[in-house]
Amino acid sequence: MRELTISAAALIVAATFFSAPASADMNYGPVQNASQCWTLSGGGSSTNGFGYWGACAHAASAPVAQRTRKHRNH
Image (cartoon, rainbow, N blue to C red):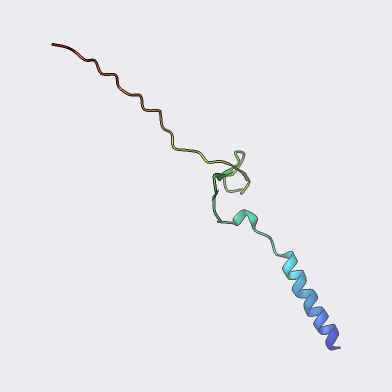
């Protein structure tokens, strides 16, 4: 009878463990890994958790042009 009780308890624990949701969409982990960043997918809600790893977006900056100086001899 003891083995039956232990087996039933182990079965209940295993069923509970495997039926729990993974909650992968609620992972608040890192959004950057080395040189790649996590980007949310476009369609629908932005909180759906779907996305992809890709190159990180850099801050917008224009190349700085050097000013030409006019030398005037007086």
